[in-house]
Amino acid sequence: MARFIVPIAVALVGAALFGHGAFIHAKAIVAQVLLDRAFSRTIATGQPVKPWSWADTVPVARIEMKRLGVSTIALAGSSGQALAFGAGHVEGTAEPGETGIAVYSAHRDTHFRFLRDVKVGDEIDIVRRDGRSFRYRADAARVVRFDEFGIDPQADEAELVLSTCWPFDALTQGPERYLLHATLIGDR
Image 1 (cartoon, rainbow, N blue to C red):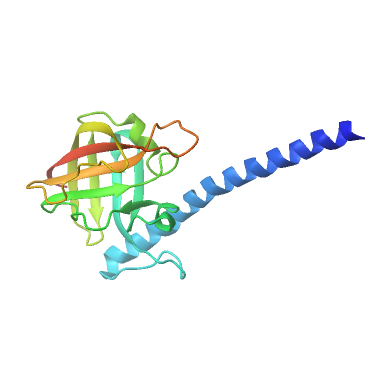
Image 2 (cartoon, rainbow, N blue to C red):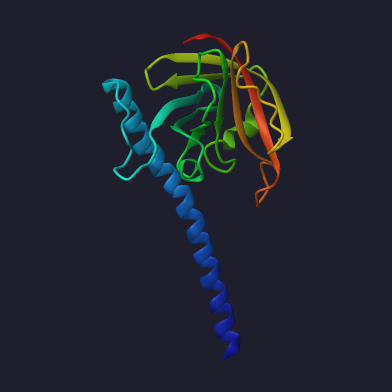
């Protein structure tokens, strides 16, 4: 009897784990659709629009990389709850297009998965919630400890940093972060 129960139990646990993983990715995809709608309404009305009634954040930007066919909505703040649904604009950092460094963070296995394919010279477009668009050029990437970012939000130029966990293919969170740096090259 145990010969039948153990394989069935293992299969059920495997199915549950697979289902949980699939749910997380499905939630990220559905959330981006709702976030995209809320972001479009935010631009149209000039007022922040929540993506769903119980949301504790609002969409603040769209990050696009045409070469990679990527577009993702960023939320206000970088709390764990915000990052569960999209990239987050790190509190206390500049707005895109303004003097200083605008910093966005997201998970390496969902919204910032594309960072592994970005090359120096690639262009990144940011559309703000007020509808203004800015183009940046990726100029450097580095790996740092989570507590040693070395980012000076008071930089003299308009700059952008996209941040995610490192290494890209790790199964658990580690102490290192991947930072992609880009410099403003103009309005779009």
